[in-house]
Amino acid sequence: MNQRTGLNMVHIPFNGTPPAVQNLLGGQVHAAFLPLLAVKSHVESGKVKVLAITSPKRSALLPQVGTFKEQGLPDLEIYIWSGLSAPAGTPDPLVARP
Image 1 (cartoon, rainbow, N blue to C red):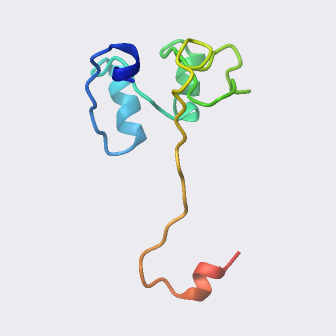
Image 2 (spheres, rainbow, N blue to C red; image 1 turned 90 degrees about the horizontal axis):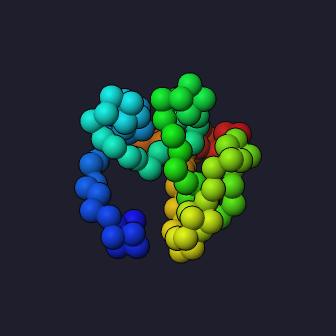
């Protein structure tokens, strides 16, 4: 983001999404890349403004918010990988269970 825009944002690592949202709401950070569902209620209450969506298309959840591509950053797409994990040694029957 900094390289593409000339900004000088500082990366602040948080231990999960909730602390990042709390710090955004509390004004300790001025911006954050966060999952849409984590801030949607705060957007609806007017406490947070979503500036852009990182996906290639607008979200049906906030169709009024443009993508980074629409805002002049065509190569800025971010995908968050999610997976279900279990501790090593979890018995195979539990892992294979639907």
